[in-house]
Length: 82
Image 1 (tube, one colour):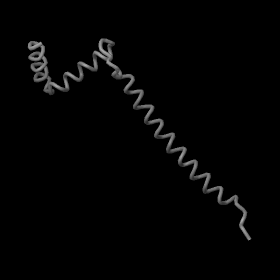
Image 2 (cartoon, one colour):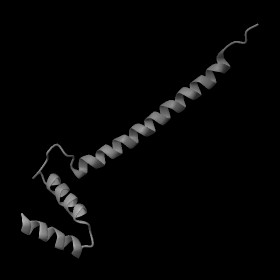
Image 3 (cartoon, rainbow, N blue to C red):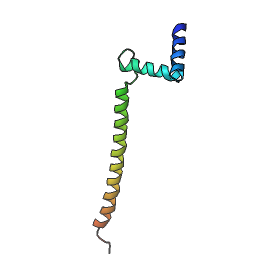
Image 4 (cartoon, helix red, strand yellow):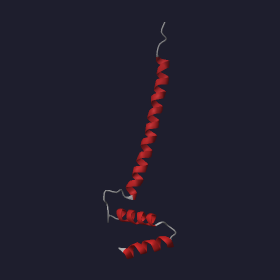
């Protein structure tokens, strides 16, 4: 284990990265290749989650706009009270 820590430190220095960043990249690569899941999302799943969250946000905005438009045009349909 001590040798691995030294190797990670050396490689991180060579790549001008922090050890933490390099370890995170290695961990994500293991997850993506199915060697270590631990319930973590693969990069593809993370991208899909980002895409779906963006789509939900857009759909919610469109829904809110449609509600406001319906309320605005419904005012014109109400007969004037006399």
